[in-house]
Amino acid sequence: MPEVCLGLIGDNIRASRSPDLHRLAGAMCGLKVSYDLFIPPAMGLPFEAVLDACRDDGLAGVNVTLPYKERVVPLVRVDDPAIARIGSVNTVCFTGDGARGFNTDHSGFVAAYRGAYGGAAPGRVALIGAGGVGRAIGFALLALGAAEVILIDSDPVRAAHLAAAMADAGGARIRTAGIEAVAGSDGVVNATPLGMVGYPGSPVPDGAFAKGGWAFDAVYTPVLTPFRAQALAAGARFLSGWELFFHQGIDAFGLFTGRRPADLMRLRIALEDPGLRAAG
Image (cartoon, rainbow, N blue to C red; front, side, top):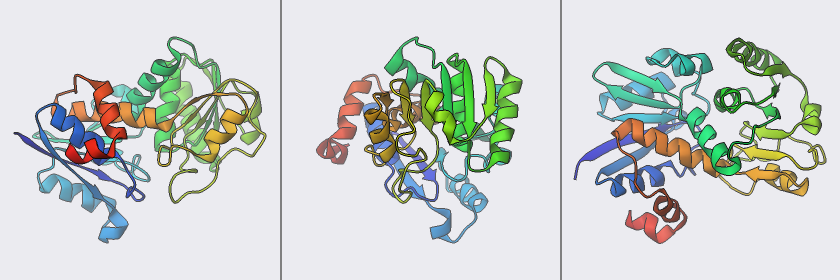
């Protein structure tokens, strides 16, 4: 059975389900996949040294997550102009031509949204968080036909930079605002780490959600977040970060291996079954 060595680089990844997803997907495609976690602070190394070590140790590629999705961009070759415009990379393939960067958060969010809401346009969306995943989702919202994207971030300079990049791409009205913009939005996206293991809370004050609409939480560990509870209490149709995790993972696996599991429902079931995870 061919062997493929992969990994994930990030600071808060001990609870990540990516190893399970890639190992199970590999087994379904006739591949033996190893998938290790690399935490630069715990290793006593800067991110750049960890990335180099993964390449030198023969890994086929790595996923990259918080807080390195923007930091990795100048270290890789990005061939797709659309991904270069996003300015964030979460998937790196080590090839004979060097390290190549991709963004499966972008493609994964489009797939997750379409899977949940079909052809419905996102409408006016409050996007909270303008970091790596926020950038990917912002451009995905443009691809999905959002009428307006309102960027909300604790760092107004970062929000302004993303607003400028998205405005250059065209296709929707883009502006920055404070958290009060949530109340007038059709959709609300949490692209911050708040709610994740190690980052308690929600970026949205209680009672701020408008009634109805839709909401997406990029956090998936845990699945039951305060943001989710707030959205459901307001009657919003909720899309879990698990869906982004799943779709971006499948897209990344395809980039790493050139293969795609034929039965995605079987993979979903295996990811939810501890016994099958162990068997995979």
